[in-house]
Length: 378
Image 1 (cartoon, helix red, strand yellow):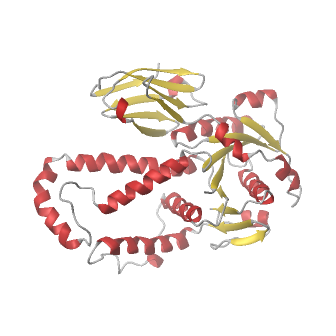
Image 2: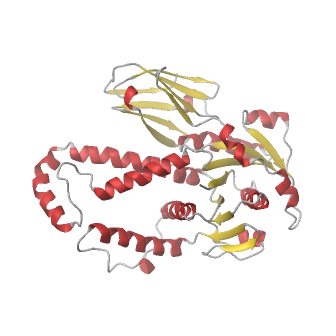
Image 3: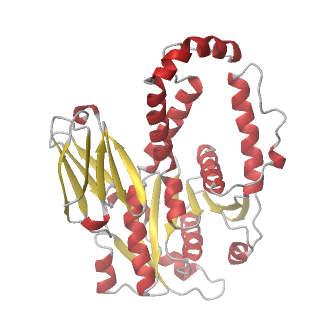
């Protein structure tokens, strides 16, 4: 399976330059590489020396480049939606709505990019996919989209199934659904085959994001204080998305002792300033991306100790809120929320304490569940 690499950092830190150098390095190692850009302006094409299109094109040995065009991608995606609809409904409803007429709404870009990456990942054509996205919280929310959608699905399906309204209308709805759908309706649950298919897809996506051999991020900084501070913030925020940060890269600078300490225990590399189209010095300075597996994992669950450890570098205890409502624990940090579905041995357990230690939020559980427990980490 391919490894997907993406780069995070403050605007102007040189993320695209680093991403291109990383793609060229991977191609030089003999890996089949796809460089994926989401920037519709000519800037990335100028750096690559070729205008980008919505179809992968080769620009060198083992290296292809492609632009995710939102308008083209939504048109293709809509056709896929209609194919899925036709599998489940006897009389499809969307046949007279065409992809060519769909406007791009705010927030659609992330979903479009995620779907495009999924398709390229599943194609079997590439060993490394370098995704040059926005490199900020938008990219991180995209990385955490599967986890968030999975929570919404299980939470609201459960709400519907347990409601008096569903129990009342189910005897009426079920025969109607059976008449409309091409598959058997179980009659026992609101989760139909399409929802189960969605669950399976989301589960696979979560597994991929949580595996640094499959998906890894790198922080790009300069020696400017604002770039370093933003890099640290994104490093911590990435953990909320389940994305492993494999290291930090200093663009147009050097690795000082103070800068290395800011990102400890990550490895920090420095790349020189690019001169013209001479990429070789940057390629030679790239880190070993296979070493991302050595970085701290965003979350570790220790059932025997009844502990959950979350890695939240860059935050202090006043910036983190922990809430438990029912069987899940919610962590709020970095303007993001992450809902942790506890494994069966910890379900029914309440939070007895939480503390920060060496960049980790350590949550301890007892054997009884309180109805609602909310606190700022002490």
